[in-house]
Every structure is written in structure tokens, then in C-alpha cells.
Length: 196
Image 1: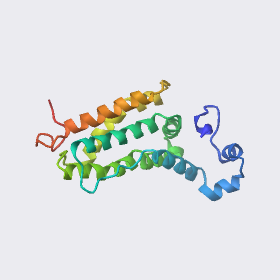
Image 2: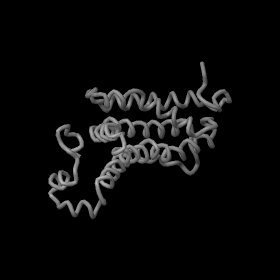
Image 3: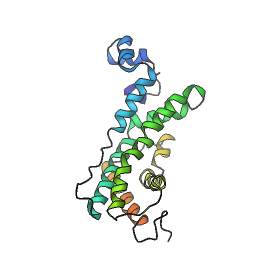
């Protein structure tokens, strides 16, 4: 991963092989090429966001809030890590014709994977009567906005101030609480965030 975060290094299979003390042929056998290596790296990063266990008896408000908060905390800690920032910069920097593959890899294994992972949790919360929404995509988009806010864009633009664990925990708790307020099941938020 040090190659990704080193601005002077070029991410080639030869450079990775040298850094990993293995042959280029071995890397090609394992990953099939640079895109395969980057896909594995993005998936490894995404796996740091733990899946939420859904209790067999369903959620109550507090356990649902805690699940959302834990997911948000893992997500923020991963997004603000140097490897994720480097992958996103690489994907954005190569967004032309030659870079389309990495952009797709990051999108599919990043935000879209997070949406797929959170969808059963949101459905379980709705089934338990803890939240109300019509469109899953909109609910996820709201949660994404509450969790990520402007943190990712600031990091991509060079803000190198790390988020300490205490700040990540506070931001995750705030995102979960606000999401529950916006999608409260009193009928006023069933088609989207409640306007106050």
C-alpha cells in the first residue's frame, strides 16, 4: 500500500513486485493485471466496513441506532485512511479514457458496495417501524451525505489533517441520530427527509 500513498511512486506491476519481493509473474497469476490488483485493494478497503448483524427478533430504536453508528464509524475510518484517499485520487486523476477502469472499480466496490451492504439494515429498520422511506436509493444517499459530509472532498483536495478516533465516533453518532430524525416513522418523512 505504500506505493499508493507515495506521490513520487508509479503504481506499476513491476514496482509492486519489487516492493513485495516477488516476481511480476506471480502478481499476474494472483491478480491478472493492474486492474485486478486495484480491485483487490479496493475490496480489501471496503471489507474494513463491517456488515451489520440483524437480530432475529428485529431491531429496537437503540440497537438500530447503534448499528447505523457502527457502520458509519467503520466507513469514516476507512474513507479517511491514506490508502482510500490515494485510491480515490488515482481514480479521479485518471478519469479520462485510460482511467475509466479504476473509476468503475472504485465506484462499484466503494459507495455501491456500501449501499448493498446497508440495504438489508435499512429494510430491517423499516420493517420494525423505526424509519419510513419510499426509495432506498434516496435513504442511502441521505445517510451517505450525513456520514461523509465534506470530509472526503477535503481530503482529496489535500487537507491532510487526520480525523482522530474520537472525532470519527462523534461524527458517526451524529449521522445516525440525524438519519433517524429525518426518516422518523410518523408519516411526515415517508417520502424523504422531513423538512423543518
